[in-house]
Image (cartoon, rainbow, N blue to C red):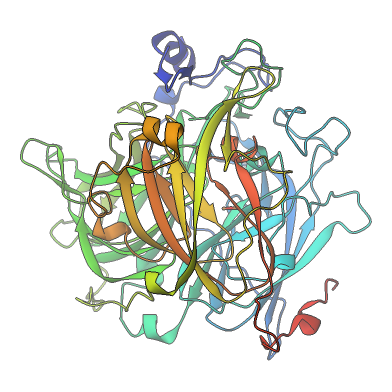
Length: 576
Ligand code: C2O
Ligand code: CU
């Protein structure tokens, strides 16, 4: 009996009034579900994505060519069938791009994918109508401070059989060093394209960070965390039947939590570690699953190995924050590392108190408002196997890292109240909106160029949503519970908790993602300094594809004669 079916049988789980698990129903494959309990764990090493080599290194920019194709990859352990995936440069995840601060990078993103999707398309979603091509892609560099024409506007997709099956994007990298990631962003199909494998990592570095002497080279390890469900023939499974009986088939579903954990494109891998410090750069690349991470020594499973968080989405924190502790009763104590989809966490873990032969498990511990976790499968992420030291650890974990470039609320020229809403669509499905508006409704958020604004994300829905704003790296001013019913009746916010209670120090850096829990208001502050149209959205990809995404436009300021030294001309070469 498959776990997926057991899960279904077990799970008439209701979250906020709708049932979340999906029915097996009409799948994209005729093969039976692969039981995650039967997938051998920690048998294959963690793959490290290759560093992409530039085609040319002009004095102005490093240029790259990246092609999207369909291919087979051994995502499951050796011995099980290979999986058909989509990837960049023949790899899932794609190769990592290493950039330097203020040194531009030009990427020619080429679509050579087939014209048919292998996952179920919902043609009732905006942008995915039956007359649209099935396979449409456009790349977004998540976290990038970039011009709108290079940001991957969701409707600027292209296909492989178009005359121009590529886009050339220029990234200036004029921002704090950070771990960014690139992924597909085609309107209506983002969840399917990313699930198929279209994601990769992109680091920005500088001398200041390097001078900190954090663990580097072989001791800095990227961890792209995702979940996937497989069929017995190795194919990827994505549900096509909504729990809502009146929904079309295939249909988008309220949220997809898959049953198998995949790190850097490999199910439940292991990593050999020396007894020393490591820097782990964690990116949650899952469609809908959040992770809460602890490291558990196998010899003492009631304890944990505490570690430090040193950075968030937007770069380093001011100082390392101790995280991942357990109280004597085994419960989490103090700040924990929680990463919702698209959030990043920069971690330093010290294995020096262990010796060769010891093993530790990176676990995904329980998150109270996310019930789709099975301790024996999705509760496990990967294994660390301690080996002999290969030399002295000369890296350091400095007491102070880097001043966080905070924005001052006194500089904000505008505060916007932006609701997260839940409505029902014409098929009876729950649908989430932003400011009660749909993707195609007129633009209502128009910050003036070179101004700072405060945005209040007011979550009136019974679900948490990880919110993302393109272009900016923002500060989080507060996260507070509020009286939802009173707000709905009067439009007035009554706070039920103090401003900082729900804002742990390890999350309080500069961000491009912020979790907005059910019944909370999260206040962010951002500076808008590139004109043009961008998007903001929930990063649960099932929500994003189903109207929980809105445009915003940075418009010229009132001050006349203000010249933002513009090199639009130079940047416009949209050809290669
Ligand atoms: Cu990571 Cu608009 O996306
Ligand atoms: Cu959402």
